[in-house]
Amino acid sequence: MTNGLTADGLLATELSISAFLTRFLAENPSVEAVDRGEPGDPEPRWFVRLRGEAKDFTTVWLTLGQRTLRYETYVLPSPPKRAAEIYEFALRRNNALIGAHFSIGVEDALFLRGELPVEAIDDDELDRLLGTIFATVERYFPTLLQMAFC
Image (cartoon, rainbow, N blue to C red; front, side, top):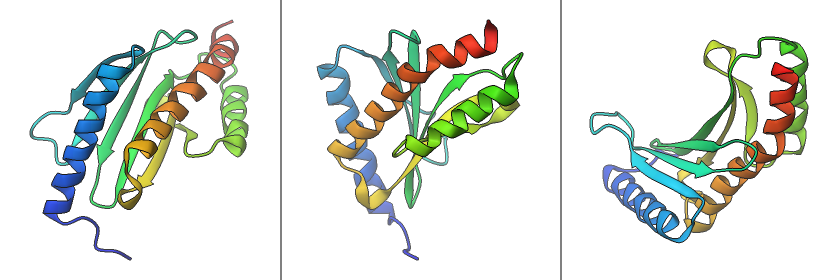
């Protein structure tokens, strides 16, 4: 097991992610906003709000830990009907997903999550993970919504 990032390494990685997200916002018209977490948060955190077509907005939370960068987005509230079918549908999609997976979270809501070792963080990986989350939500949200509310 590695010791994870030192304080200097964590700061350098944090600055690198912030710089990428600043460029990402400036260069990508589908990015609505990029915000930082609260100053007192124990781990650096960013919020990336992306405009979509299937789902109006997808907000991806990035949280930098000592060993990993965790990312997640809220996909759907707890389904009012057909919950078992919806969870099964989402879990079966996990078999084909790379770099992210559906999970059941707080209050039985459906999330899409992933994790990246800090050693792998670079601009290409950040672009890939944001693209993966966005594309997966855009692809499956209409079906999930229809299953849950129609």
